[in-house]
Image (cartoon, rainbow over the protein chains, first blue to last red):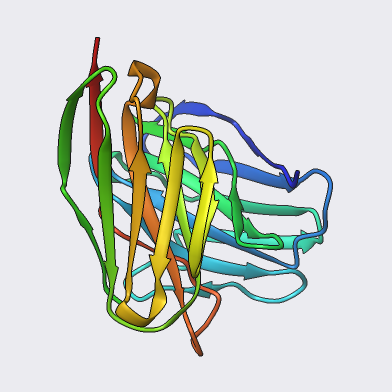
Length: 113
Length: 110
């Protein structure tokens, strides 16, 4: 089946630094990928939609300058959390459309100290 | 936007019991999926079921699109079934965005 590989699975960084999260579609081409954020004991909230070769579309309230998304190829999308702060600590997970439905990466747990 | 409501929010069962989880949605959908999120955060796709009934082992799901609800049945529950179950939909005629409900947290005790 269609697999999305997400790395790293867990990262701890210092406040003020940047962190990059990668999502790769392993056995299919993903023209569109989605990035979600999940706080503890809450549901998944869509942050942005990334399209290969074009700018990402951000949901209302998501700072595009803080959460940089790049979708440079049909198999790779990246999310960079810039100048991270403790309130950015969360679980980030990517998704891609498959036929039928959607498949998800394994998620990245970010802790900013 | 489309609203997705799941019930119950929490469910505690003894091993071997059966359960039904419900998902109501406020608009017509192109896509409805049920996911199980395990303790490590991985989302496991259980069913792609915008309409009709499907079964996979001890799990089955039914979506009545005309009445805008879906049900997930878990029979003979096991401790490994514990976790959070999410329903997620894509509104018909809208973008590709998958909108999640708040989930049902299931705890199966031995």
